[in-house]
Amino acid sequence: MKKTYPLTVAGCQRNLPLCKLNENLTIAGFVIFGDVELTCACARDLLKLVSEDEYDYMVAPEAKAIPLIHEMARQSGRNEYIILRKGKKAYMQGSIEVEDRSITTAGTQKLFMDGADAEKIRGKRVLIIDDVISTGGSIAAAEELVTQAGAIVAARMAILAEGKAKDRTDIRFLEALPLFDPDGNPL
Image (cartoon, rainbow, N blue to C red; front, side, top):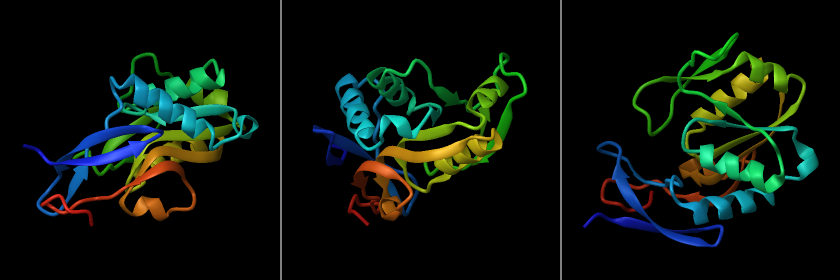
């Protein structure tokens, strides 16, 4: 039987499967896809950490943050949000891009912002949202894209701060999540 890590976030208790990344590191797999109760509760509690007049737009990297940003937009009454894509799409004109390295992604990937979205947020205050912040690579890449577009980062938010990310003072998050050794013991 696979080991799990019990986590309570936004009033929802879940048992996260422990997933070995390499010979030295194991993480607790946190996935909100398909978990409507968890997604709605986390969106609600994250919105409590930011005032409505603090930002103009919400931005999130693809893919696991998509249901979260959608629900945050719905609950806050916002009519739109921006997704930073992992691949350039045919509809994207005048897109901008940056490289990103995530703890859960092998190698380097790119994030793209459509030129129309970049124009939309120019001079605006942006809330950057993700599901989990660990090394901070995805948030940094998102911030670089937002800055290239001429927007101002109002806040950085995530459901969980994993490992040393819990010590960061520049992010708002709901709960800390430890990293684990190969045997599943918290580091």
